[in-house]
Length: 286
Ligand SMILES: Nc1ncnc2c1ncn2[C@@H]1O[C@H](COP(=O)(O)OP(=O)(O)O)[C@@H](O)[C@H]1O
Ligand SMILES: [Mg+2]
Image (cartoon, rainbow, N blue to C red; front, side, top):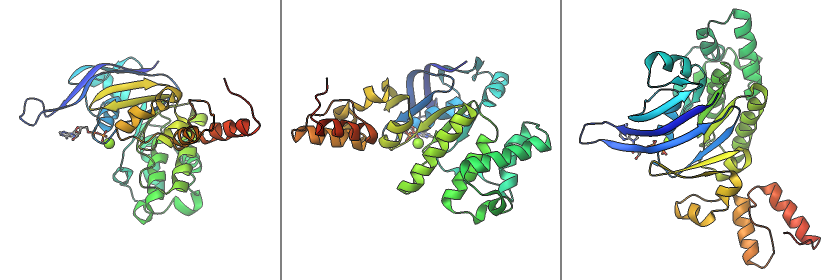
């Protein structure tokens, strides 16, 4: 069963003079196991939208159901929330326990799993996020580097085996190799746990690489939704919104302008390389 968002509108501080409608009439489905990329300029409503997925905020009007559980209903919300693992934009604030081990085991403990299963999950989660057990388990989260803190926060969420993993800018502030490592990690545990992923990212390249469905928010509304190929073919619209298309799409466009006949709809580096090799061999594309 999926997450279904129907005609969701959300207003901050309703009824006050500062009332601000951050989401307008959003309808969207997140299917089992799907990788959804959420993009949009700053302030477009991305963080507000994903916080509706675990019931942290409830719709002002409209409905969010998680596997049938209505997130507007207090009792059902609890069941729905248990299926959604959320990693915030600044995961440092999610860490609070004395040791990395205790921090990661906090969630599984709340699920009332037995000690052996908790231990197994903590070890597995640490392995999946690339934190060496012997080196990190007994460390204080406060001794960790930024990247290690983020890994610990991620491990704490995946140890709960969420059915839906929701990530707000998980790669923000990391260098290119750190970004790649975190993205590979996310792909890795999606494969292993079979969870759906909803990822907010500023990087079109990261979204292009991993997402199966891309949702573009603009001023609180869904501007476009489609496959990466469909979305990243709209270079002009993306540029207009201040969103830079993926590197491969931009490169293909300038090569085309320079007279190199490349097919449209290229948005990953791999596809660009393949197309250039075909071009070099003198092959005509259709
Ligand atoms: N607590 C709040 N009260 C009032 N307005 C808010 C609050 N939080 C966010 N907003 C506004 O809602 C809009 C969407 O914010 P946000 O969801 O954080 O966007 P994004 O994550 O895409 O940058 C922004 O215009 C922002 O200023
Ligand atoms: Mg945000």
